[in-house]
Image (tube, rainbow, N blue to C red; front, side, top):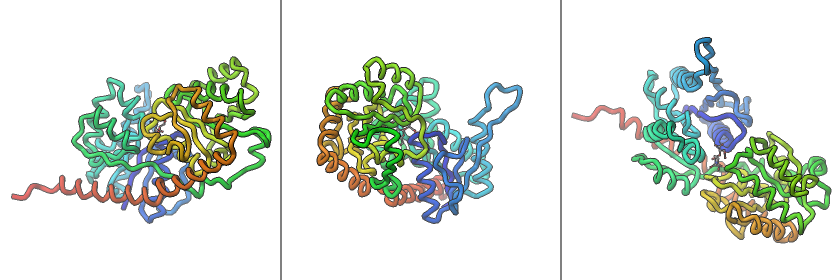
Length: 383
Ligand code: GMT
């Protein structure tokens, strides 16, 4: 198949999933064209069958903004016509789904559009009043809609009146890249003493990630265990969190690493990963931690219980239940056998329930159905 993939390139779940899907499809022998405003941070530029097309903003003195959605639509039209794509897969509905729909109306070769909804495109940004009707329209016009958890499907069905069926395809992980044996001793020594367990958190530090709870729960746990908190990523809440660490007297136990490209180098160094988000359609970090054999403590919201098995691979609590989170952290950090049991179960769950090969096959089956449904729509009704 010849497949176009649209995604946001920044460090974040939806761009990451789109990029890994592009790699997997190209490895399976398909021709894949990734279209974005810059190369997604993990995109391989050397893989056979994988192509990248840059969307260049339109700079014209009369316009104050770079007309990104026009530029993207024009690029989709150009790539579809030049490479004769069979379909376009929009990751994160805003603005990709609408641009793909418009491009299909404009191009010489109309094509099916598969939209994958990742989370905040319908729960946060997508609920914004002026955007809602555009989002609803373009999702509804997609040939096929998929999403990353059963929770997310139910949410879409409740909030967007759609006739299109929604298929759940869970996110996936390359368990050879995220691996418990990838221990970089020097890196670990730069983060904590050898005898000090590490609690890790990774996010874009926005309110939805509830990083305040990370600090508060870790501060409570610190009364019982001598541990380090390592924070990966950056975002708008960083400064207030640094202030909070000083206020709680734990600043010397917290390391703010900033944005990292290879989170797989850090996660295996953790004794536990803590993610108390208020919303999370899936939560890639939890799956990545599981693949690295690291137990997790997380909130019990949205799609998270589909990823984490409570009591088997980690513990689920309410997002703001600091006591319960601290309790779970102390239990894990103080008991190496429990830590090992949870970690091994997580690794096994990641390999068996979220394997890349299986999810690639699911997406390919979904593409074939979209192509069939689209060509059936295009055929003139028989007399
Ligand atoms: O969580 C974010 O703010 C980033 C966002 C994204 O689109 O990059 O993540 C969403 O998509 C990820 C990949 O499917 C999911 O793992 C995240 O749970 C989801 N975030 C939310 O639902 C808040």
